[in-house]
Length: 139
Image 1 (cartoon, rainbow, N blue to C red):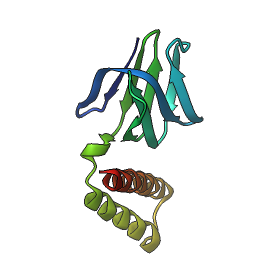
Image 2: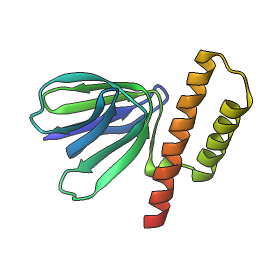
Image 3: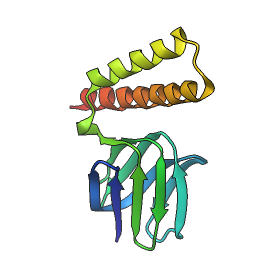
């Protein structure tokens, strides 16, 4: 049995959820983790965490940003800076964040650190909008 926990500094999103597999966006590309995977630690990237609940055939989704992944014998822990499951995404709010980030990146002379910060905000907002809109289309 494989379990998944998804945690942010602010809250627990998923706690010991029984899954059959998970796809995790890491700094080195997407990892697919199945039961029996070797122990592992990895740096997360902004993206979509997809997981299949035990006994289900469809993949559930959560949008995550930077953090860490730990895989142990029978448990996967994702410690993310931010995370939202599909039902938590406010598409209108994500679209506004996308517009703000685009405007900031296009309209100002930003220092390199600020530019990177707004690039990450833009990327996170784009993913939230995409996942949120797909979810709305299927419901």
